[in-house]
Structures are given as C-alpha cells and as structure tokens.
Image (cartoon, rainbow, N blue to C red; front, side):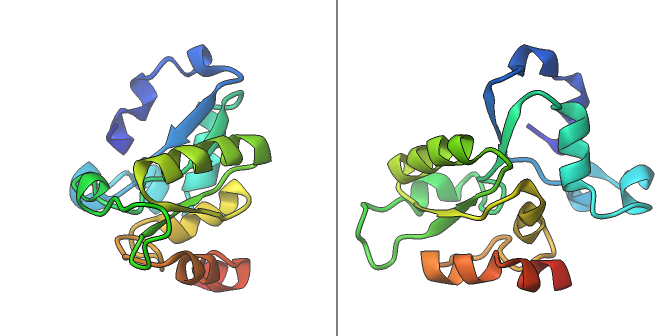
Length: 147
C-alpha cells in the first residue's frame, strides 16, 4: 500500500494482529508531506499513531516489489539476499521472519521498531542486496542512528 493511503485503512480491525508494514515515505512517489518533512524521523511515530494496538513489524520495505520473485533463493544459497524484520514484539518478529524465509530470503532480526529507519529511502539498507551479516551490521543502532 502506498504510504499516503495508510490513513484510509480501518486500523482498529487489526487490533492484536501482526501487521507487516512495508511502507516508506518517499517524496518522489508520495509527494512532499509537510508534517513529515518538518519533523523527521517519521516512521516509528506514525506507525504507533495509526496502528496503536497492532503488532507492527516493519519488513519488505527495503526491496522493490519486482525483486521479491527475481531475488528469491533456496535456503543455504551463498547469494541469498537478507531482509530485516524490526518491531517491538519479539514473537511477531519471529512469525514474520518465518514468512521471509519461506519467501526465499534470509531474515535478520533488527530489534525494535525504531531501528527500521535503516530500511527507509536514503538510509543504509534501502534498495541494497545484502547478506545476512552485512544487513545485521547496518542494523546496529550506532550505524543507522548516526545516518
């Protein structure tokens, strides 16, 4: 779903459910949104406001939709691409990590939702084909919070 359409979703229908947030605010696609441009970082704050009772896990937002099929590989492949899962609910992260693995990618637990900034446009992991070790290194708080 495009970032700008998130406000049209009946989020209360997702109370207590795991929600995979694959959205990014990206001005070339969404246009500029003054509220966000004037007060970055926006991601964690916006997700908690729009989905306060959902079990939000941010993932899949750092690869293109067309890459999901093209880059999928069997487990154990040395060229298998890694995808992060970040969220404040460890159990929800584990569930999404299993899905990521089934889709053909190496899941990397990136910890808390606030670490998801590393996955957004203009940040270290966005759009890059990384191994699990490379992605894990970019998700350390010292790396992406300094970005």
